[in-house]
Amino acid sequence: MIRVYVLVFIIAAFFWFKVFLQKSADERKQYIKISTLYGVALAFLLLAVMGRLNWIIAAFTVLIAFVSRFLPIALRYAPQLQRLWQLYRSGGGYAAEKPGNVPRAGVMTMEEAYKVLGVSVSASRQDIIDAHRKLMLKNHPDRGGSSYLAAQINRAKDMLLNK
Image: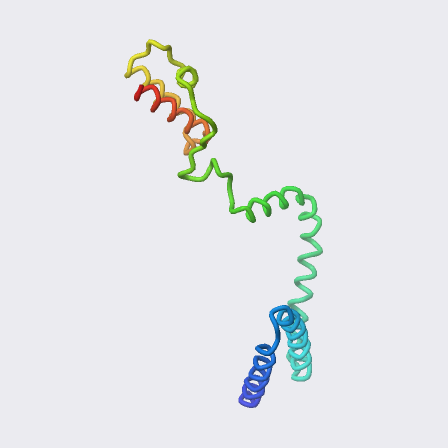
C-alpha cells in the first residue's frame, strides 16, 4: 500500500513541478502558497481517513496549552524582545563592540592624548607606558570595559609614543 502512496506522490509532484515552471515569478509565489494550503489539507484528510490523526491533535493541543501559558510572560517582556529582534536583524551587536572595529570618530590632538592617559606634557616614555597599562587593566573590554575607551587609550598611547 505504501508503494501506491509513493507512486501517487511522485506523479503529483511531477505535474505540480511542470505547472510551476510555466508560471511567472510573481505567480509562482501565489502558486506555492496555494499548493502548500492544499497539501496540508490533503495530508490532514489522508491522516483522518487512515485513523492516524490522533498524534497530530495531541501535539496541537499541547502547543495551544504552551502558548496560552507562555503568551502573558512574552507580552510582559515585549519591549525587550523587540529590541533583541532588532539587534538580531541588524547583525548582532554594536559596531564598536565587534572585534577588529576601531572607532574612528575624529582626530585626537596631543592635548587630548595627554588628558586621556592622565599624564603631564613632560611625562617620560615609561610614564606613558605605565599610565596606559594601568588604564587598560581597568577599561579592557575582556574585563567588562568599553571598547570605545580602550580604543581611545590605545590611540593616545600610540600618538604620544610616536611624537
